[in-house]
Length: 138
Image (cartoon, rainbow, N blue to C red; front, top):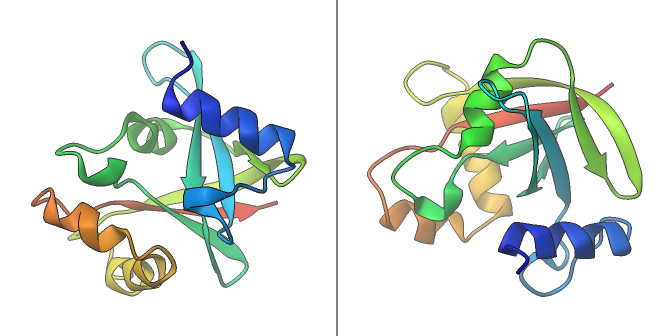
């Protein structure tokens, strides 16, 4: 049985990155990250808010109590990440921005939250503040 992410990935690829329903009208990307322990690649569909020539993706995990694994895997990745954006597979620079550590987090999170209003529901499910990743296509 396909997982939720597998189903989204299949639809993303079949429609050149255009999704309907929940994601209709929003930019999404598929982020490929190697596991920092296993090296096994994982692919995660993420809402991607356009911002100053880059994209903001959020490690909300729908309001789960812990960050999704892709965040730590991205932080451990030395070199560019691979993303799928539309019908293209691209290399992208990346950096993780964390609340309490990075001064720009408040402004970036405000941008992402405005783009993806469901964030308000995610925030109600947990006390943690969500890390963001800034993804810039090379």
